[in-house]
Length: 483
Image 1 (cartoon, rainbow, N blue to C red):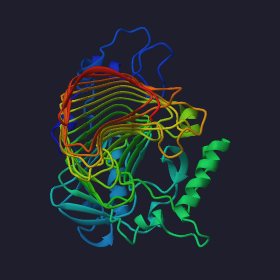
Image 2: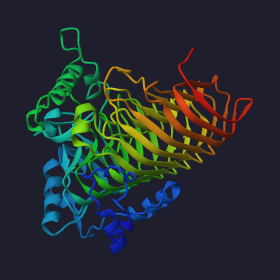
Image 3: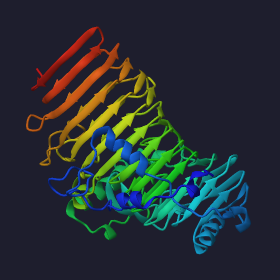
Image 4: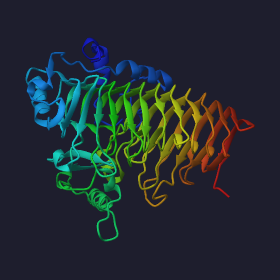
């Protein structure tokens, strides 16, 4: 394991700083992410504070080798019960390091407990069952921003603290063209798609206010996530490789103090295989990791529509640095499930390099989703290749302007960003009643784009020492409706 898990400790001051509950949204009039009445750092000073405060969990390093509990390193027998027994034994001792040694292990759902580190050693591969029954009974989860009871994620933790997944081994979800992925398009016999049918039912229940306990999908076609931490804190994922995911790969929900460090997220083929999706979570650092995904590399979320507004917990204080991103719909994305708001997002020193990466920075919403996004900082990111828009903020995502929850996007700061290729340098589409406002771009170049800008309903776009193709910009632009 990482030597950091046990040896680092939180000081009393840092513990107090992180003691603010993720379940309490900021009071009206207070800066997002800040305790009422306190004077707190802003901008990149806040990012530095977040980096210092988000520390690894403290977990006893007493080892519990899963083969001692009957796990089969040859992959001939199912090891689900043996892994569970090792986790239980460690938990009964007050916590420990559950070791997956070199070998190949087959398992169903893994349920983590407090004070447990799941260490997947170099040379170890954990292959997850392709049988949906192995992820029952249903657990409380979120699916595209809506609460329900559905299949367990492959690795699931609820209401835990001090938990980690580490090691140089591989977690293989075994999703492929015959398992999990086809649910996205599997016909229901009536001209529709089974997953869409179940998805629509879930969204109807949320809109009608059906209690979460009654939103049960015990035999559904709603694909599970790969790794999910729900209502948990002090979380570390370090050094592991995740591949072949059924859907979203790492999904902290209503959680706090999360570190993703040197993780490889390799699932470029499957649908909706986002890399890391913090949702309604606070104090998250994503660093030194490699992304190659069939959807967004990183997507920051806070719940969808009525459910997001009912829970009302934003995602805030997210720091993303020193990552590499290849294929994906977006490098750093906010939305589209952002009804609970997103504040204080920082991305720097990332490399986004693929003609199959559609956007570098993307914010997507509409008046059905609603929500506020503010204080987004994006600097020193290198973009040698890009497929679509370098910066895309779009209020016309999916439903367009069809609801009563007008979104707000403001206070976006972009510095020292250099890109080559793509369809647009800037693609900003707001609403007349709610323009995208206060976007500053400075000391940046967008070379060889097909079109420099597409702007609609944008207020106070400040371009300072910006070059797009062969044109230099030092000006403030206010844009109304497109011609």
